[in-house]
Every structure is written in C-alpha cells, then in structure tokens.
Image (tube, rainbow, N blue to C red; front, top):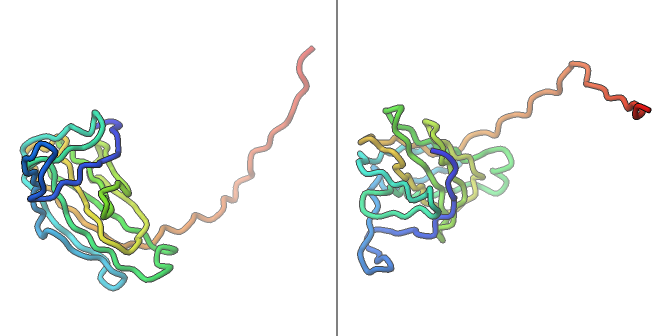
Length: 178
C-alpha cells in the first residue's frame, strides 16, 4: 500500500468520546486479549470480517471509527534479560491476496512501538519482548470482506551467520591521469 505515516495519536477505545462527542468503536477481536510469557509463548486471534477500507494512514495519522480498526489487548510478561535472546513477533494474515491490512503495536499511552504497513501478506512486526501491556491494532486498508488471523509469539533471535570463507575484495589507489 506504499509508505504511510506511522504516528497514531487517536487510540480510541469502545465507549470513549471523540473530539466531536460521538462514541468511536473498534471491532472486537476474538478473543479480545491475551498474554505471552516465557512459559506460554504464543497466542492467536481472529478479527473481522472487514468491509470498509480505512485509508486514513495515507494522509497522516490513522483514525479509527466504527468498524474501521480492530484492537487486541496484548500483555507481555518476560524476565529480565529475556530480550537478549528473544523477540516478539506479531503476524497478521488474510485469505484474499488482493486484500491489504496494516498492523500497529501501541504502548499503553497509544504511542506506536512498531508497525507494518506494506502490501505484504502476512504483515509482520518484530519488536523487543519488553514486559507490559500493548494494543495490536489492525487497520483494514483494502479489506475486501476478509477476516484476519493474527499471532503474537515470543521467538528466539536468529543466529548470526558464520563469517564467509571467500577472499574479501581488495582495493587499490591509482594516481590521477596527467
């Protein structure tokens, strides 16, 4: 879907009033929330179906109104130092290849921690597994009536590849022609 602005200051929740005084609701994920820990490392949820596109992110901040976003409450609980060898991976996928969804990981203040807003399926966020409460927000950019399936998983950091054995390139300096 191209590059879009990442800030999302509008972290509306069901029942909260907007600046205009109208209530704004996000769709409800199934389940509506869950946790990942060092002993229970994965959670899956679904959301949708989504019928209305939300392209507000192309002009700046994503705005969520009724049926235009889905929020999943994610609690992460990891011991100190866990992030040295692990990462939090969030994947959101859908069945129709022509559809497009974007995903944002928000902290408790509604600030964007990480995002994936491309045309990839699945959209994937990789973030440090810092303990705390987060919101995983799915935005239907071009939903085509699809339902999304999402997972949050604590995974091992990939190992660094071994050093290459090929002869490294060399460089020479030559004098300027006269």
